[in-house]
Length: 154
Image 1: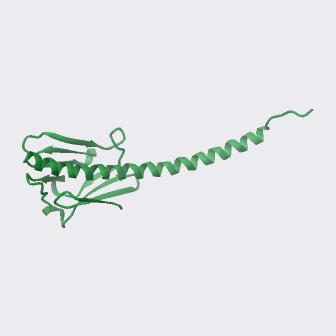
Image 2: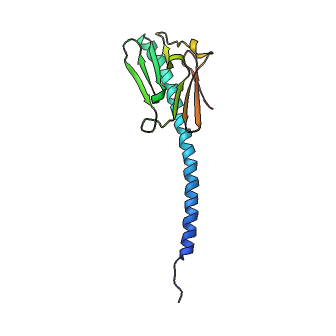
Image 3: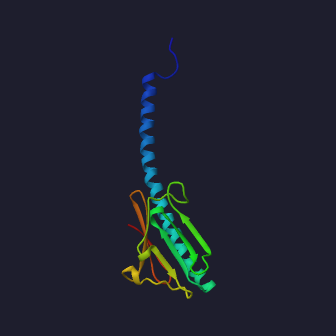
């Protein structure tokens, strides 16, 4: 009399193959989520540059983007009245999971004057840069004094 079913060996082989496949899938998705987080943060910052400039022109008062790199967040607010325009937090329990946020400007801040022009004299060149990293993936936002930006993976 023959019984229908699987042997223990057959089940162990199938479970081992499944575990190996799941391990590779998890590793692939980890890299994907790091890329997406860093790219998303760079895109949000590029939009916030445009927002800060337009707010400065519309309200006719300077708007500052101030980075707090050690805490991984930045804020956009009017300089004279401290009206909050936007706040972005990054990290494990924040809006976007990042391991690093850097604005390559003296004082870690960027100010758009009432005409919507940013002072990039401390940037060391014609463009300012902000870098967003998640794991080993980094995206850099290069921007000019008018808030126009370009995002590159570095």
